[in-house]
Length: 291
Ligand SMILES: *[C@@H]1O[C@H](CO)[C@@H](O)[C@H](O)[C@H]1NC(C)=O
Ligand SMILES: *[C@@H]1O[C@H](CO)[C@@H](O)[C@H](O)[C@H]1NC(C)=O
Image (cartoon, rainbow, N blue to C red; front, side, top):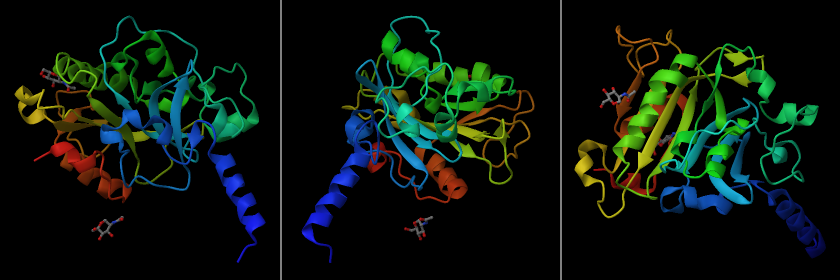
């Protein structure tokens, strides 16, 4: 038994760890998850919860792996953008490097060693052969500040140019178009990665490259999107990030570039994630009412 004083000290220490926007959970930004429930089953000791704060408002949420220096997923609500894609400097997450650091994402010209140890930095991507691929894309955010906030490196993975600029980009556009007039402010998206099963696939020997990028959405608001057929209330997709991957997850079509995107039911994606990540994953509460 600990004396009461020690227990008090212990508790204050722990609550000290939880202050700020890199925290033990997503409690400060549950509004980005369907029914305020983050995905269940994606757990690991190196994973950090980031409520992405920019200009004093939360913009989306990210689960970040400090060992692979990559996001596992970002979660957000899909909106139509009210303007053009911004061109901000790439930001980092100060609290990954120092729990007492700034709560807000931030541009730092020359990140120090603490920052570099804790996360990917812009230089990792320079001349890496990979583009900076958004999980929560700028084009799915409403305001200029919302869009700017997606340019934080904790929301970014090394993505092959053809995937980023063509196939996956097309998928993101398709999704916006599909729900442009339905599910207003009620379309919840989670977009994440599947690492390679074996071998070290990294840029600059630091940042892990995903083998696949996946996405799932949930729009279950008073049947408002029910004219969408199989795409309602929830659907998912997996995109290839490597033309040399096998055909088991997403088949490579001979007429495509090798970066195909395959749409699929939510439960099929969850089965793929279970197999590949060895985790029992529920992306949306009650499977978003999927039949
Ligand atoms: C986008 O939508 C078009 C038209 O429905 C479809 O042919 C195409 O396969 C879709 N592309 C992706 C990557 O989802
Ligand atoms: C997933 O759930 C099943 C059935 O509930 C269980 O048998 C299995 O051990 C679980 N696997 C993991 C990786 O947690």
